[in-house]
Image (spheres, rainbow, N blue to C red):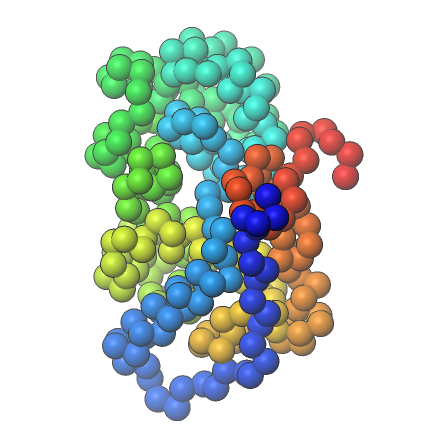
Length: 277
């Protein structure tokens, strides 16, 4: 296991970034964005989807459950869920109240239960009990939008896609890659900057960075390994020691979100639901 362990994350560079004297050109922004992606790849060579799953159906269900909650809470909830309802046919036939109670820890459990039963029935009736591998088919399922579809396509089928969640949208605006707020417009803007082959892993890197370093209310600017490329440096804590205390998950020395992390993940597995600590 030690031989395959990922290298530790690069420390933040000490030099403070300098503000550009004049507006950044489109070409300069694209070059900066691509360099940020390369450096994020060095920081997070182990970036991955943070939902536990073993097949496309499990990933689809977990992604629907992840709305308005953490991947950790979903991962703590799904082992019992998948044991009881391993297939779309099983979940389509679930008793709604029983399903609601099983997914209650993820929040919005009534709406999510309706979506899970509905999408499972649609998979059973329209797709032979299999999760389709096309975006235009996935978005016809109850509770499944472009973000969820792209997560499933990228991580269960190897189809390139950009996952524009709240972390992704926040960071690409903070980095001045786009000014848009609408997820579909953000997706189009970022797709124009990077080759399609980068889309899925770019999404993982950005989401990893947003969860660990570049937080919404108090980004850890002083501990950020790409601060020298960030036009918004200084929005958060710039003191290196204080910023270091803001780091989360493996960056801060804490467990990750997955109960079953992939090989090479440098942090500790998350504890199961109800475990002490």
